[in-house]
Image (cartoon, rainbow, N blue to C red; front, side):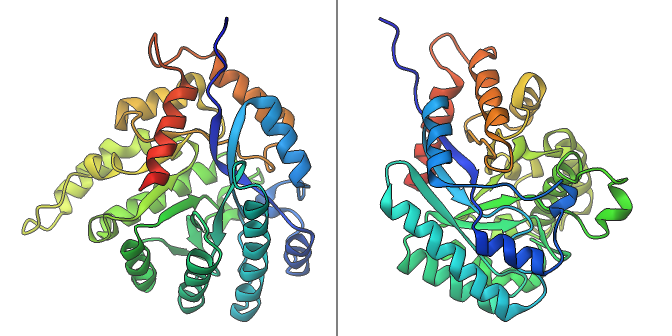
Length: 318
């Protein structure tokens, strides 16, 4: 008898609500990140995708452009609203759904308050942040109080890419998820490294998306520059060592090249599965699962399902 395939654990899954989309549209965001429009989402649609694709559990988050559209108070209220909704889905179906809470960054005070509410009151599985928040990248000293709090908690921090500043000038009229998201992931990872956030806050469990974006191909170059300009009085690990301690999901186009590059740079001991649904349509998410299942597997006895699910259980076990 053919054994039942291991169920995938999807750490990169999204939801939207009607009120969230309405708030974004009220802020003038009709084509988020240069995309054609907003997706639809429902619990039933998501469960259908999961059942048809062999996905055991999905960790839900709000994607780019997150919840801050220019006003701190409005962002705090919207973060609270979407987090209450996501927590409700998690409570109703705890075996199928987890939740990463949204934070109203770059509002640090509001984000600290929402972190406490989400993790302590709602039982969120972690928090979701963008690669930058209105040009504030994750190594920015203004965010240090938030990282101190999340490090104390040993929290999972899911880092989702977003458009860089002046995106219209560099994206050449194309949707930013195609290229700019992958560059911005590498940009914010290098900022976390070069500003010492990764070494100051080693208990944070950072998750980067899309196989690290461009980071695997740039890691040696970043390592070279960081070695040249590193303070010789410190004994910080190399850039490659620090990047190797992060977690990476395989959302997007993992095979045949992205995961091979990630493996060569950092290994696959912290590789996770990600669908990027609902921003990736259901048919695209199913095709991606098929590519994962049909790819050359990591070993004769281990599948990508086995490996990523085992890794996910380690991630959430702390």
